[in-house]
Image (cartoon, rainbow, N blue to C red; front, side, top):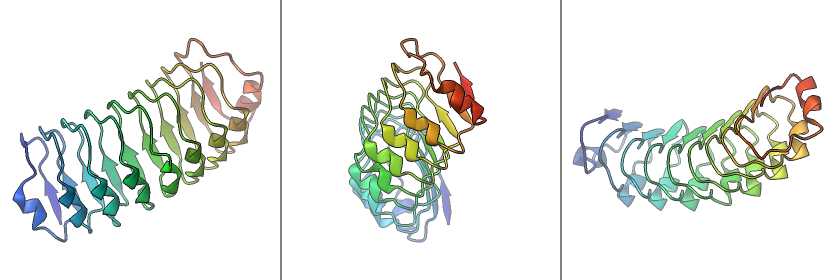
Amino acid sequence: MELDFYRHGLTDIPDAVWSATDLRVLNLADNKLTSVPSRIGTLTSLHTLDLGHNELTSVPDSLGSLPSLTEYLYLSDNQLTALPDSLCQLAGLRYLSATDNLLTSLPADIGSMRSMRELRLYYNQLTSLPDSIGSLVSLRELYLRGNRLSTLPSSVGSLVDLRHLDLRENALTSLPESLLGLPKLGKLDLRWNKQLELPKWLPQLEAQDCVVLL
């Protein structure tokens, strides 16, 4: 079952949602929602949830109680300052987008989300990444453009399936040499990092068929 309330001008989630116990896809994007009730955690059949383009300042811990949420969680273009630690319980989730928010950090255990293939976090206020991010062994694309990162944890060298790393418009001053250990990395975008001292090993990365954009 699918419910689509895209651009309906909603300020509250309709009652019809809570009676749909077999709901698999819920689209609440581009409304005027300022909060999501904790009962969202009762929608245990949900595999796709779109809460993007609203006015949310937080999302409930109960999102982590959605065992079937494996396809898609979209939280972009809200006013989120943090993601709940409970999201790390979504071990089967493959796609998470939380772009265009006010995030200053990520949950310390984000590495528990081991099925993650695509993680979009551009245009936030992140100053660092947790070491556990290196445990996202299924991750193929990581988008971090427009944050405040000065460096990356060396654990990113464990992202053995990573193909695309977007680091544009940050405050990078250095990069971990562990990036050389990414066998599938095909694109590293470093543009608009004015303080970055280019590492001497960068030509080695390019020799591994990685396109480096400066």
